[in-house]
Structure formats: structure tokens, C-alpha cells
Image (cartoon, helix red, strand yellow):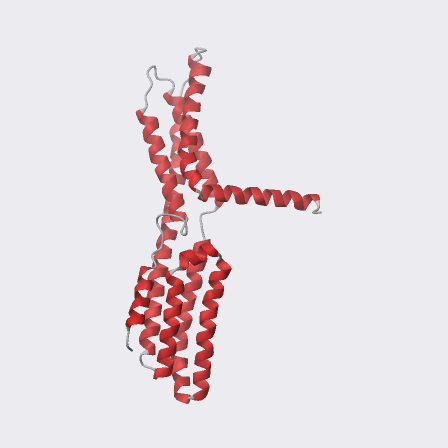
Amino acid sequence: MLPYNLKVFSTKAKNYIMWVNLIDSVYFTILYPVTLTAFVMIGYFITRKQYIAKNKPWKASGIETSVIAIFALLLSFTFLSSNNSMKARTALMHETSNASANLRRMSLLTDDPVKTATKEYLINYLEIMRDFRARYLQGEDRLVNDVEAVNGSYLTRLTSLSKLNPADREDVQRLMPYFNALNSHFYQILSSYNERTPRLIITLLIVSSWLIGMLVGFMNGFHARRHYLVPFIFIVLVTWSIQAIRDLDNPYNGVIQPKFDDLGKQREILIHSTR
């Protein structure tokens, strides 16, 4: 039996995980515009029931524009942050591709045993990187173990070659900086997949959009005739903006994802290479 405090903590942790999974799920894509529309309608009906029906006067305080501006600033900040994260992941893809090519080019200057070992290593390594997203979704630990197994096999083979031949030892020493650079990029990519916009910011953005939607509906309700254009534009723009932020912030389930195509092409070239 868990102590009471641990039970409470466990329950809160489970609730938090469920909330995170909801934000990343397809259900949120459907539910968010529905809830945003609902808040706009709530604001409209508050005006109609509490002010128009009871003939209560209402005058704008003047800070409504400032409140909307704060929301727009928050939306812009989050959009910029998510976009920068996506660009950083893309840059890491190019750097990894360059590091792989550098290791391959340097290995061409070594003796045949080291050259062959490096070629086989890169074929196996690039296969993992080509399927990075699929392997990541199967489990981060499994992905790391796959890479470490390939690295360990390559290093063991190079160690054996360096012990047998002094010339190979010098070749191995020249290859090590390129090997280390390639693997450092793998762990940078792995870290970038775990670095996402804080959930507090995402939650603040969603709640703020609901409240601003209520404000839009509230102010729109004072017109004698219903005006649908402004609420419609607000719902469309905010919905697309939130969905774009979620997509940029989600590298393994989003539509906008880092491309591993270059690494796959490098592997195909290596497989068909005669050198």
C-alpha cells in the first residue's frame, strides 16, 4: 500500500500525463476548434442574457484591446519559439549528414581493413538514423541501445585491427575525431526531440485563447444584428495558429518533421559503392 502523499502524487502525475497525451493527440485537433467556438458562443449569450435582455448598460473600459494584444504577443512568442526549435532540428540533420560524409571520406585514405570496417559501420549506423523516428516511437532506450551496439561493434573491430598492424593504429587514431563528431550529433538530435515548449506555456496559450474567444463573443453580442465574420475569422486564425504551434513542437507525430532523407541516400550510395 502506498502512503497517502505518494498516492496523491501518483494521481497527479497520471493526470498530468493524460493531459500531455491529450494535447498531442488527434482528439485535440478536433476538440480545440469546437471548444473555442463554444467559448465565443458563451460570451455572446452572456451579453444577450445578462445585458440585452435586462436592458443593462455596458461601456467598453478601454483595456480590451490591450488584453487582446497580450494574447497576440503570447501567440507570437510561442510560434517563434516552436519554429526556432524546428529549424534547430533541421540544422542537426544537415550536420549529421556532413559528419557521416566526413568519416567516409577520411576512411578512403586508410588501408582496406579499416576502410571496409568503416563502410560497414556507416551502413548500419545510417540505417538506424534513416528510421530514427520509427525507432524513437518504439522506445528511446531501444534506440540508444541500437546505436550503442553498432558503435561498440565498430570500436571493437578497430581496436583489433590497431593491435595487429601499427599502420592501422595510425588510421584508427585519425578516424576517431570524425567518429566522435558523428555520434555527438546523434545525441544532440535525441535531446532536441525531448526539448519542447513547456506545458505551462501551451496551457496558458490555450486557456488565453478561450478567454479571448469569450471576450470576442461578448463584445459581438451588443450589436443589434448578429455579425458572424469577425468571430469566424478569429476562430479560424487562432485554431490554425495553435495547430501549427503543436505541429512544430511535436517532431515525432507532427506533419512538419525533420527529414532523414539525406542519411538514407548516403546509405544507398555506400551499399552500391565499390570502394
